[in-house]
Length: 229
Ligand SMILES: *Cc1c(COP(=O)(O)O)cnc(C)c1O
Image 1 (spheres, helix red, strand yellow):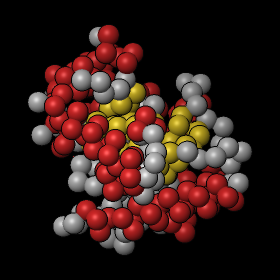
Image 2 (tube, protein in one colour):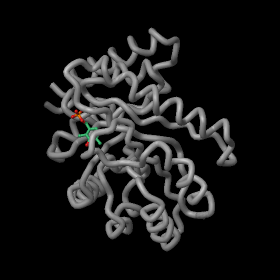
Image 3 (cartoon, helix red, strand yellow):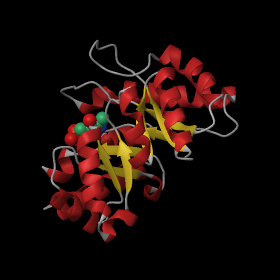
Image 4 (cartoon, helix red, strand yellow):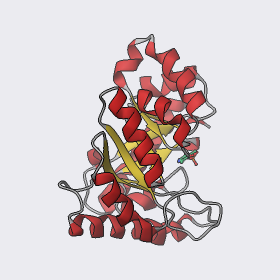
């Protein structure tokens, strides 16, 4: 079941890439396994998944420790896709290869501090609120450049790109403008040369809208239900 689901998603990724002349190999599929069992995660890894996403630190720690005793551990990268509180930064830097949800300079400073303690360079994305919904987390687009400048002074945290969550919509086509906005922001940041390297990663698109996100420039998609449900 999980294996068939993953094949179907990979097909869709290939189709979306064909639309825009991009190499499907350049798209990272993050399997979001919140609420799923260790056994389900193992099945996903057996089916070729190498990137696992979680949205709660406690749950992620349990799964990380369980898989850490097995040969699976070396094959996977861990992604934090949910909101991260500053007081959990210490645990987060211990296990995550990429934190998608940095939404304040304060949080970035805490991540930097904890990463320095274990001599790690922590890769992160900035989460941007592209839709006006009150409930959505993330930086306002107009605050992103200031936060990047602030983070540039920190030694143990490195911004690799941007992440957004599109609003829930009846028709996934309607998510297009939000994805486009994030891509434009990434291009703008790179044109301003705020960092000594180009920001590469655009984490956008979930079960209902990942194909559209890819058409709009996503190179990292976060898929849960379409894999596990
Ligand atoms: C749960 C979650 C996903 C995956 O959502 P699905 O709709 O199950 O594909 C992606 N991103 C974030 C931040 C999530 O919390």
